[in-house]
Amino acid sequence: MFKFIVQKLHREGYRFVAIAAAITFILLLINNYLGLIGLVISIWVYYFFRDPDRFPIKDENYLISPADGKITQIMEINGPQELGLEGKKYTRISIFMDVLCCHVNRVPYTGTVNKIFYKPGKYINATLDKSSEDNERNYLQLNNSNGEEIIVVQIAGMIARRIVCDVKEGDTINQGDRFGMIRFGSKVDLYFKNYKLLVRKGQNTVAGDTELIHISHRGPKYRQLIPKDSSEVSVWRSPCSAPTCDQASSSSK
Image (tube, rainbow, N blue to C red):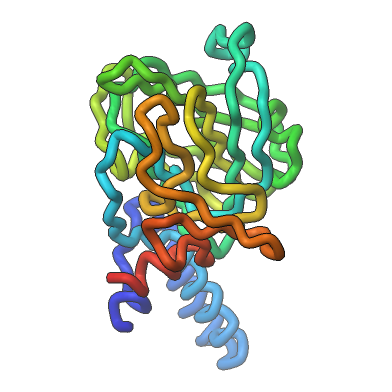
């Protein structure tokens, strides 16, 4: 319980927590009620920048979720033009992160960063489909040891104004590793090919924990359970695979 309340803070959050605490102190000198409001805001800022530990399965047969949030779209689409992949077909999963979700992004599988491309853009609502093409975004093209390719896209939202990417081209990164974050409400897109989908639209995901897809040509290992009357999916590995943000991750530790 204590670990759930007091969590590690991401380095991007120290400045914001300090500013919120200073404002809270000033408000408290003016009025106790204003100070209480400032305290609530400070707690929220701290909670937003939390960076809890996650324990991925470390299995190259699966792609795990790069973000906490809710799957808002699954569709067949051409690859990103910015990477010269517009002539190839991919499946794209979009995961929206609201302001209550942990915004630290994690690597879907172990591989090498082949290319990074930053694209300036707008700041429209990240829940809209067009935000994947119009908003500010950062592309990571990853290749694993088998030559399989995925693309992870960090997308700024209506409030988010800073995309943080902590890796560079040529880096080898492991499944579940932190590779960046997006501040204050945003979205992550995942492009892939030749994988068996294990989730559906409307499911909540946990970064570094929820298995999104299985490499189809390697044969099934887990089965998928889709309730007929529910928008959420339970994956064989976890009895609570559709939690809200990092609820399941913390409760299972």
